[in-house]
Length: 464
Image (cartoon, rainbow, N blue to C red; front, side, top):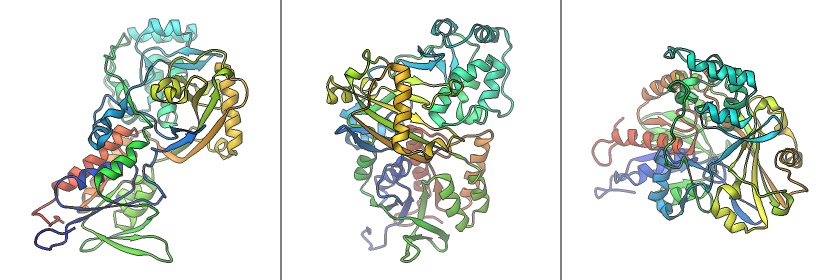
């Protein structure tokens, strides 16, 4: 790409084609700044944790299957790239908790902290002593949180340990696959610190989540296509060096390629970003990134005969507290939750998703696919009465897929971004920093692109 004066257009290399990297590339390539945008992805496909697959011949999400609707970035991007008519919302938002040998309705909560004590009592999730301890919270004075602490410590002190075990742990386990006694209150659950005294909290009428007909996985391919950027898959960036411009060593060690760029966006997980920043002489940022742990999980997607269930499933699914000792940590009734999927399957087939794996539970994920399917089927039999084998099953493993926002995470991210800011025309973005959901990653990618665009000087010149 060249301007009228035959001066090479500034080239921006985006490393990583997850949704954060694709959002950054789309913002850069459609900005009108005349940039040449190259996206380098080490795997054979784009999308990262957005992945479409098939079960029983039907397209389904094998990765992220929803976008937060109450923040605008992901839904707005979907609309901008031509998916406006396919944005949809769950047919039901009623969730449950499988605990004390029953699937019980999840009362209104904020990140697991109950906001309606009457609904909590009626749910049967808590014991009488646990309920009494939660009621005591109403008498305690509210104090500002002076410094970061773990979610579990804060909630246990405020509402009692049983609220942590039966509600907060399963909810945070579903989001982060971590433990509340490691996760940062400020970074992972700032909503809890901001809660008033426990009382009914209205959620409004805006749907919390949104999806895309045909699967949220469609978003990645659509953003890549609409951006007009050059997308290169199977292109591992092994080294990043700052000279007069940025130099990226791409490809195998036997046949390396040197690619130069005027600016770089690193949209890679923390370990890969740390490695590249080490070669870019940002030891401080690399050291901080190396302290971000990741949890591994597996998603088991099942197609089962509707006749294998004793009654039609209702609600969107259920969470599972670790204290109950089950194999699965959550289940989603996908074809009930998403009307488009239920309509595509017809009345005879139901699709469910079960997830397995929390931080420190890597051993269970070393089992064969068939064993993981058997664990999921066994738990679903106990929870909802599933009888017999599935029609089809797909196991999707997300090794090191979920970054852990441990205590002090926000301060760590501030130090990382400060160190990166010392390197001209370089940005980082992705799930490791300010949010792991689709919407948060889209926002972070767009923010990185906006900061690079602000560094542009006269047309065709990148400030360094």
